[in-house]
Image (cartoon, rainbow, N blue to C red):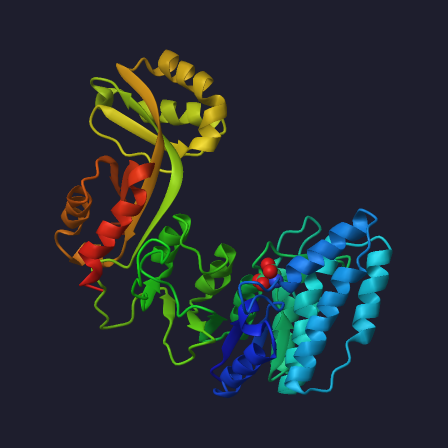
Length: 440
Ligand code: ASP
């Protein structure tokens, strides 16, 4: 049977109005059989996420402060949701357990997980289908690492024996039965895990935006949405800071070949973004898929005549970086030059010692480090089949009167990366977007 697993984020479940929209979406397609929920988040900018309130309760409890004023806000929030939905649900016993827990020797993860737990109860009451507590199915090992094998052993039979179900996101349990959470935003991961276990044909991730955008809307006015993006392109863009999903959410579904569809609960008719292994048959990729960037990089440039003949030169340079525990982000090279791009905050504390060692052991003709570099990646499979993309990238930046400090093209022809001075970052992205806008 074709199954869809749907995950609703905090803004889609922030209050009764939002929950009703989510319910309507679930009911609109009978294949939407398993629902993964976040805790109530923000419907409006001034709202506070329930998870943040729960962390506040925990922090107060361990510092010996009073928790009641915060706990009562959470309780009121759920009471409003329940009355707005007109359902018959009494959470007083759950709040009593939480109060007692906070008064004993509280566990941070248990407290933080209650937003999802209670919201799953709410959704289960609305939909009239069972709530399947993630603590019984999502397994972590004793070190808190997600245990896929143990999870699937429990989760797959549970899915087989329940035609429908609501799972709280964000948490599971360690072998001793203690609640353990993923990192913040982790309900995305639960959704992906459930989608894989259910053999879903799509994992719908409902949020408050109609998918991913070609560029950051804080920089570019009204950027176009991305219709289709491959997992590899997504990885490139997320690495550069364009995040819509928790990064770890991609792996379970990618492994299983399940596409992710990012959708907007407030605009359910929008198609959103499809994240896939391969672009659909017959789909002609746009000349670029997305533009993203990141700040605060430094570049160490090394020049040495006949570098290309010196076997092991690159290895020696990288060994020195590794000895200083520095991971490099990019390494564009020329015949006699090598540049190593690293995060400035990692480089700064060891810069003098690193430069001294590089000088001593590689005996370069010239070596220097420059800070204040921003990196911009133009990403897309379409680059392989479209001539002149690199030229357009470079000319768009030149047109904006910006000096390019570094150029790197990934070997898979999936991206072109340029380094510019921090001060030129926004201008460069705007100019790049303008250049490619007509193709999107
Ligand atoms: N409620 C958790 C958080 O705020 C997890 C999630 O929403 O995905 O981080």
